[in-house]
Length: 475
Image 1 (cartoon, rainbow, N blue to C red):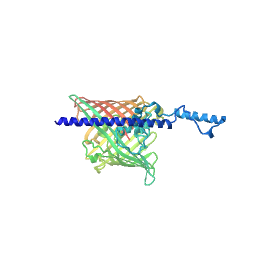
Image 2: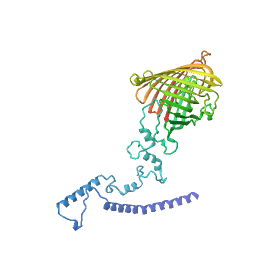
Image 3: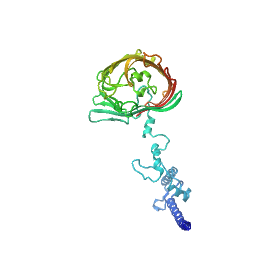
Image 4: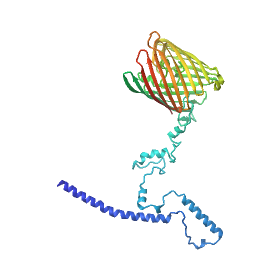
């Protein structure tokens, strides 16, 4: 009984739908026919000749006939360029469908909201992505600005949105400030003798600003590391550079504040200019640290130097646990002839101080670059050290030799032999790492992809392998 009642109601509903359809469709066709008639009367078409019935405008003058013929030719030319469909060739059904055709290229002001009525709004990003529909990335989009940026230099930091994130001040002590953000991280596939694991490594994430004051001799830099470092207090690791620089003395820079310690070349370099994903063993043990200090840097044609004195603390809030002194000297034998003979740098330095213990690190560096070839050798010996891994009283030493070749401005093949002895008083603990890799400089150092293979040959541990895929982006 229940199902019979439902069936009866369904039959009534179907009859109602059928009757409504028979009534609606004829009126729709009639309305479409009237629209077609109106369009035929109001729309100009190619090869159309208009009969002029005004007797005052009729004339047999030859010049007037020429003007009339020219007007017809112009109207024919304009009609030939019409891109709208010809209503004479469309059926009423096609015209009805045209009213509801989904078109993501409809001209709509970019600053006006639309109605969330269908999926078209989900795909609106593609219209804005390529506004002129020429299958090219528009330059006024964020991705377009990055895509069209041309950066080829790879020995310094570059930024994809430098112009967009730079602001000049008309009032106040600041002249110009550039905001920036940087990221460097990758996936590590670790192959141990009896296991396999995959790890994500956030090597560096920075947000900050640098700029100049109204006095052009004064500049500043400040940045934070918002992603916590494993095994370190967050308030210790969050602080990056925070210093003011003065350039009043010709060929010199005076830096006051929290900045990198020049313990070796690679140990004192920014993470965003490193050739490999990981620093060499001497760099990551002896260096890669910052301190609160006063630093003087001089740069001349045949030599440059760095002298610094300050706190031996390794965080901005560490206080003053002791004093540290750092000095470095580079000699550039080729001087102004480096474009012909290549650039040769021979350097050395010392870093020592007191932080719970007395420590000292001596380093030697030789670097050469010529056209597509780039190579360097760096060695260090320590009687205690105070690097990014903390204070150690061990007597350690090590070296790293690196060579690279740029096949194109975007692709570089690199290799490194890296040895570290964590304690010279103990035998059988040498750590050797052999690394080969490829750097793809998509936009210089501002956007690059790094692929490294590392073979770890440690005397007191079984051999292991690592495959690292990393990316770097600087905005």
